[in-house]
Image (tube, rainbow, N blue to C red; front, top):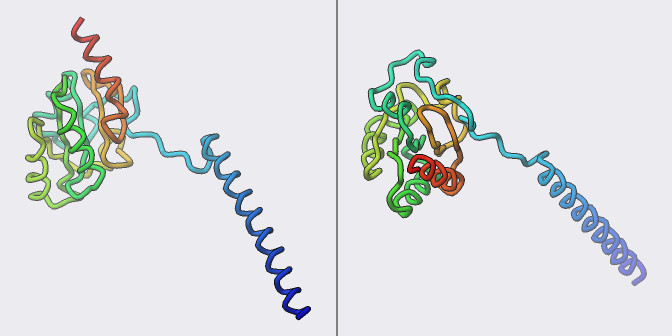
Length: 181
C-alpha cells in the first residue's frame, strides 16, 4: 500500500512540474509573438513603396500588364489551386463594385496553363494576365513570397499590399476619395 501511495505522490509531483513548465513555455511564446519574435510573419512582397517596373524581368509581359502599371488599379497574384486564392476570389465577389480595375495575374508555370486560363476567366470583370514566368521569380513584383497577394497600385507604385481584401480595403477607399476630389 505504501508503494502505491509513493507512486501516486510521484505522479502528482510530475504532473505539477509538467503543468508549470507548459504554462511557462506558453507564456514565453506569447511574449515572443507579441514582441515580433518567433512567430512574426514575413513581410508581404511586394511591400508598400515598391515600384512595379516590368522592364526588370527578362521576359515579355502581355500588353494588359503595361496598362496595369500606368493606372490606379487592384492586382491579385493567384494560383489556380490555392485555398487562400479561392477565399480572396469570394471576398472580391461579395465586396461588390470595386472602385478601380482589377487585374488578376495567374502563374501558368506553377499550375497547368489551361487550368490557369480557365481559373482567370472565372474572375468576373477582371483583366486576366498570365505571368510570363513563375510568380516567385518576378523581380518586378519583388518575388512574391505567399499567395494570394493583393496590391493597390497607383501608376505602378504599391500603395497597399496584403493577403486578403480586408488588409487593403481602407487604402482602396482612401485612394478613391483622393482621386475623386
